[in-house]
Length: 165
Image (cartoon, rainbow, N blue to C red; front, side, top):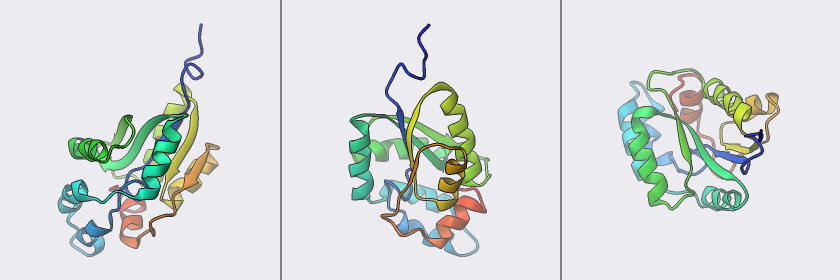
């Protein structure tokens, strides 16, 4: 029997917000109370592409199978998928947070990664959230912190305290 983990290229797992997509133009929706989550996610289709993330995605795609792991809610699948295609990012599976899952990003993503590593070899995970990166390191998976976009306080709160992205 062929080991499924070794049968294909290792996975390059990329976050979207802060790695590939510049979210700064929509942070005002969640900077103050009341937070407007619907407007925040609806504006994601207008996110500018981050050149550094684009280049890394294409570099990794030469030797890895691409998979996108985002804390965006499932209800934004169509918008997110269209954004990835419009910006000519590598084709790959898109894993998203369930709509009512408000756990911290590190919990949602690490649970997903643990499940994936049982089936596939994980070559690299790229994320902009230092809490997520630290948790992935504790799970002894290869990870890289995306540092090309300043990590904004409203996004940190959204990801780690409110479990929204």
